[in-house]
Image 1: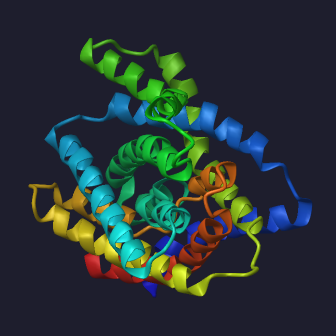
Image 2 (image 1 turned 135 degrees about the vertical axis):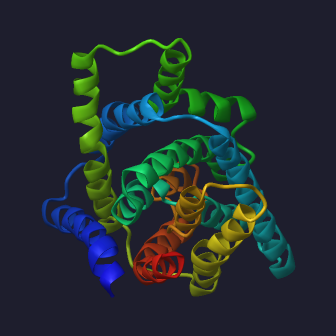
Length: 298
């Protein structure tokens, strides 16, 4: 219970504030999300990569992400084939289970649980996941409608992508950002995580509790909250991960479905009701599963 009160509850309360405000005031989320995506998150990403000591652990993180993604996609494809589900249901399940909320849920949980070093790993992982979501998420949401070029273009439309590139160039050339400019970045970066946490609560408030397909939802919950961290644990045994990074990746893999992926499902009509339902249910149940997982990992 101590882990719940010290780590999980503070994060849930911020989500709850966003949820209540949205139910009360019906705020236009798009404007806030735009500021978070185009201003705050790039600053957070830039600060993380600019100040991080990049080593082989980051390469292992990339390999980890690819293996985890492929494993979950294969599980969904096998399940859909055995059950005789349509391609649209298969895509909806993949969207709901292959992409985790490592940003506005995972990052703050890891900050509270593992401190600044763990948080730096978490931000690096969320950038990687954002790139994967923009590529594979678009592909599975728009299956048959979008092409590879469109998916690649969506990655390069992300401001965070350029924040990573600029940070790496400065590090590679051993160039220092002027202190006054860095302070500006630092101030904005500090606002990123609280803002995206409130946005998640607001997004959850817009999901309707109607006509849930509980069979598909149960499968999605099991894959996202149980199978995914088990696969993640197995992957961390295959490579010489730093113990803290291994914990960060396992916890990140246990996060609920990414709220961002709901927008793709709605935009391309890829079972948006199913994707929204799994996102909502996994977020609620994760309150308990994340608490248990943190207690197990220590």
